[in-house]
Amino acid sequence: MIGALGSCRGVAFRLAAACSIFLFVSCRWNKNVTEYVYGKTPVVEIGSDVLYAEDIKQVIPLGLSEADSTLFAERYIRNWAQDVLFYQNAIRNIPDTKDIDRLVENYRRSLFEHEYQRRLIDQKFSSDITEEEIEQFFDNNQRLFVLDESLIKGLFLKISNKSHDLADIRNLYTRMDDESFEEIEKYSIRNAGRCDFFYDNWRSVSELEVLLPALDKPLEVLLKEKNSFEFKDEEYLYLLNVSEFAPKGGIEPLDHARTRIRGLLINSNEVAYMRKIKEDLYEAAMEKGRITFHQRKNK
Image (cartoon, rainbow, N blue to C red; front, side):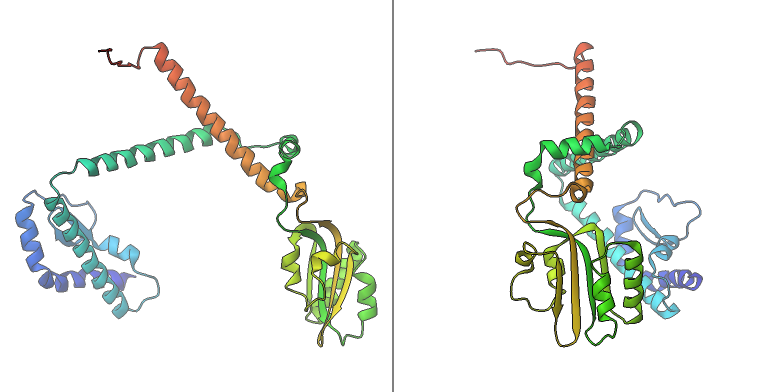
């Protein structure tokens, strides 16, 4: 990186010749004395705009050779010079800046409001949501939690159909205890199989269906008939044990919706909090006579 910085300084001299006309013209356009940043090394200057070696150093990607660093710096300086010259030219050729000034002021105002709101929420608002609040929201808003796809909890195994331990695995995969899980996991590791435990979290039926061979019936239909399945193809045996099934069109399970509900409640509380802040500011201003209403007189 030190070499890259040294190359940046060398680039300044090579660029000076290429940009001499630009620099000469820009100096004529801006006769103000340039104020340099203390402790930084100027590389290129166009009027009052200055590019420093330290700024170039920060954008040069790590790991570049000295030659590539020099090439990168040259391109960066040239692009910077072009942008500055174009911006200066734009200012000279747009004398009426009322619309731009208005847009800038509106954007500046929105930035201040956003930052102030963020600080108020961070400092004074608690985002803790109780389990009681989550359950109450879930119970009172069931229409928001109608499933557009079926969900299941369970265990999925994909193993070679030539395994010598298939009888043991068939016996283990429907048992939902820690000892069985441990044995299945060890077997999968030894035999390079696939083992997905999801008894504690919901998965979409479509997500599991793509892992299975071609079926005579959709998995969602089969799930209405039983909860343990065995499928085969030429190479593999596929075992699926389902502990819970939430069908499409039904109500989403609370433990699946909990994270989303917490987000909705936090957002709702923040909106209510900010609304109260604004209402309090308005009422206080009205009491102190800080707001003046100008009414047109009837003709």
